[in-house]
Figure (cartoon, rainbow, N blue to C red):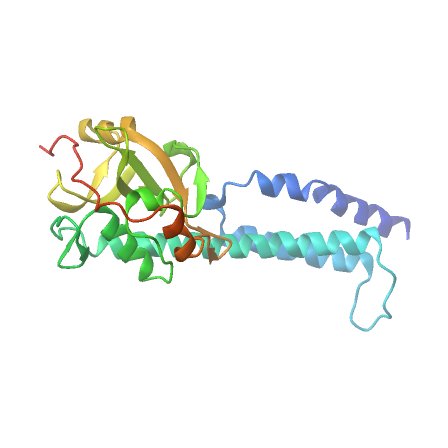
Length: 243
């Protein structure tokens, strides 16, 4: 019995801070091995507590709560992977349209403007976004306007000459953006470490995440349109042309 108690305490030591550890997780780095380890921890707890299906139920104890916490962490890991997958798929869909020409006010594969492109590729995966970059700046979850805070599929919003948001791009990972750019003649990738990319880095004013825990974070479009009604299609961006 002493051995079983010591083993259980060791397991609890591993889980002593599950919530803070999860809060600090870099969700983009989660792997299948993380999920397998979470499931393994849950099984070890079940063994340590004697919670077997054939045993009679017992009152809720700290051990039962620890088991519930392990299950919750495993579920959160899985749902976060689902959200990341949706965002990555939106970027992969966008990749299919590289080379499609820029068309002011365009929102179809015949031609896109910046927000028409972002709206289209996310709609292909069940996430409905508003029409313009200024409206998109109110959709989903606010992030720090810093490339280091972003993961693939996040929206990056840029100010124009008058200081008003006028351009949106998808963060494509590896310090790149994917967007429909007037100065770049259509849908393309841009490297943020390049001379042209410096324009986008210095004009980045907001970032949003529109999927989380496997579901869309976009509020009802009717409410969003009421808060920020359509004003005008996004203007051409003013980045230096590629060389």
